[in-house]
Length: 225
Image (cartoon, rainbow, N blue to C red):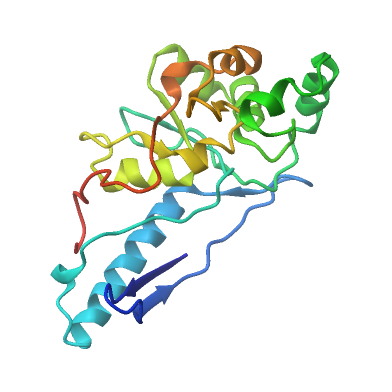
């Protein structure tokens, strides 16, 4: 995790703070991270940088915008009423979904079915099959979907939802580049594709709204900025 502050006029790096995020490997081929730790480390990095700016005699209120770069395929599901994760984040490199991928691959008679719509091959990398594993194996996820309080997102969505208010009006959104790595977005319409949602059995109500890559999404609701 790193939070960097640049000068708008020159792109000069003014200050930064970096911390390491622990990766969990509970089984061979499984790669997880704690979503709450991801969030807390982001908040820590922001707070530290604000302190550094003050030390440099730079007013933190002069920051005009904040952007996010993240692990695109890493999958997080959380409870919209409590704000708590329903399971650890499943990281892009996790391969526990190999059997799910093999099952889907055997069902696809037209090998270009997926690539012509979403541009991606069937693979353990992408979020749709990670969601399938969570829906099949984690009771908390099954129950939250049944009760209509499950939210899904990649790391960008998790951070934006929390930083813009969380349970108190947090925005459940993503951008087209992150959405394009889920196996679920139509590259032509830039929207969630009903055919793919049906194919992967993903309920549309858990998905974030897809937005452009560069716009004002919302405002920070807490913290030093």
